[in-house]
Length: 120
Image 1 (cartoon, rainbow, N blue to C red):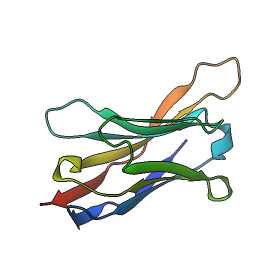
Image 2 (image 1 turned 90 degrees about the vertical axis):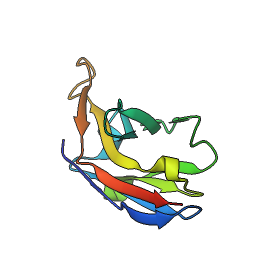
Image 3 (image 1 turned 180 degrees about the horizontal axis):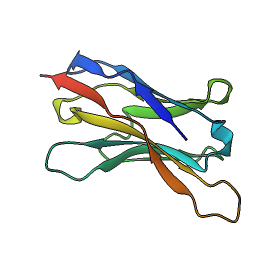
Image 4 (image 1 turned 45 degrees about the horizontal axis):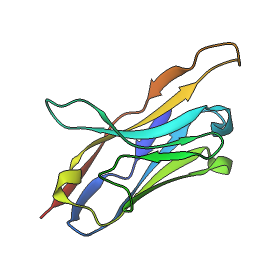
C-alpha cells in the first residue's frame, strides 16, 4: 500500500487547511486510515482516524476543529483543519492499517509527511 499525502503549508492562526491522502488501493479494503502528527523530539500522536465502517476518533486537542472524511471513488482520505492554532504546527502523516485477508493481522503503512505551519 502506498500513501501520497499533500496539502500542507503555511497559514495564519484561525485559518484552515485541508490535507489529502490518496491510497494506491481501494480504501474500503483498508481497516482504518488515520492522520498523525509529530514534532521534533516528540512522539508521533494520533490526530484523527476513521475505520472502514465510518467510525471516527479525534485527539481531544482537535475535536470540533478538525474533521476526517473520505472519498471512496478517489481512494482519498481528507483532514479538514479549521481554527488552526500555532500549536497545530507539525509534520502530519497519513497512515493506513491494511490486511490482505481477514485472517491476517493488519500492517501499518505510512505516507510521507506534510508540513503544516501555523503562524501567530
